[in-house]
Length: 437
Image (tube, rainbow, N blue to C red; front, top):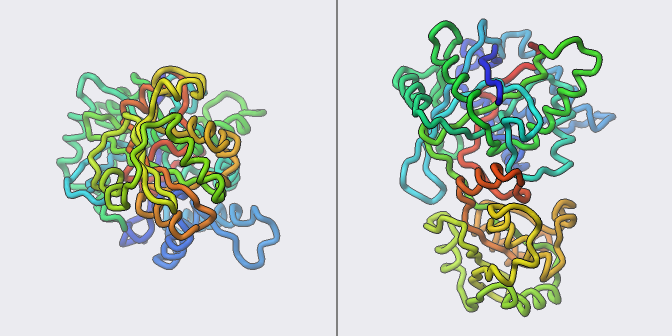
C-alpha cells in the first residue's frame, strides 16, 4: 500500500510576499509563451522562474536555465521569500470554480502530502502514457533544484466517508490563504500540523490504506522515480527526501473530479489525405455529413451535455462538418491489446481509426508532429480553418468519465497520451516539497 506522510513544506512567506496570487502559476505543461511572459512580468518572485525557467541571452549551455532556477531557489530560501514549515504538515486546499462556458458552481477539496515513491502497480497506478521529451525536462529541473514545485494529482477511495468529514471540519475554519487565479478559480488553503490526534495524520492514514490512481502528473511521477533511483546509488538506507513526491490527494466524496475533453487535430494530411479520410469514414463509423460549426460546438463545445464513453465524435475539415458514431464491430480488429475498459474508450477508438484510415500510428503520435491537442473545440476548428501548423482535420471528443479512467488503471492498462484534462489544474507554488529529508 502507499505511504502518505506530512512533511516540512516550503511555501512563500506572507511576511515577504503580500499577494500570493501574484507568485503562483499553472502547471508548466499548460503555460503557453504569452502566459509565460505575463507571469514573469507579474512579479519577479513568480514560481514560474523555478518551475519553467527559460533560456536567457548569454547562456552557453541549454541546461543553464535549470542551474539558474536552482540558484534562484537558494536565494529565495536565504532571504526569507520562501520559508520551511517548522514541523511536518499537510495542506488542505479547496477549489471553487465553474467549468469553462458553464454556470454551475463546483467545489473540489483535497490535501497536499508527501507520498513514498513506488513502482506502478504496488498501491500506485498510472492511467496514461507519457512522452520522453517532457520527462527529460522535468528530470533536469528536479536534479538541479532538488524540489517538487508542482504536485502529482492522485485519486483514491474512502468508503467510510471519514476523509470528507475531516476535510469539512478543516474548511469550516478561516483559511491561511484565499486567492483567485486568472481563470476565476478560487483557491483556499489551510496548513494542518501533524501531531497526536491531528487531522493531518488521520488524513494520511486514510490515503495510505487506499490505492492511489494518478490523475495528472505522470511525467512528474516517473521523473521522481528516476531521481530516487539515482540518489539511492551509494546511499545507506532509504530514509531520504528523494524517496517521496509531492501529491495532491483527492477523494470523490470530498468533491467531484472534473475532466475536460482533449480534442485532436490531425496535421499534414494534405488534400489527398483529407479526401481519403472522408471516403473511408463509413467503414468504421456511422456518418452524418453536412453539419455546421454551430452544431458541432453545441455537441462538443463547453456547454455540451454529453458525458462521454459512447463513441461519439465531431469532425471538421475545410470540406465541412461531420458527426461520427463508432461501429464497435468494425473497429474491433484495429483496437490495441488490453482490457475492456481501455478498448472501449473514445480516445482508443479514435486512435485505432486514425491508424487504420490515414496511417497515424502510436509511433507517429509519440513523435509529436502528426497530432496537436487542445481542450477548446472552437480553437480546434479555427486551427483547421486557418491551416495553422499544418492542421487539416479536427476531431472533437466528449470527456472521458472519471470512472473509466479508474477502470483502465484497475485493469493494469494505460490510456493514450492526452486522454484527460483534469480541471481545474492544481496551482504551482502553493506548496513546494524539498527532497531533503
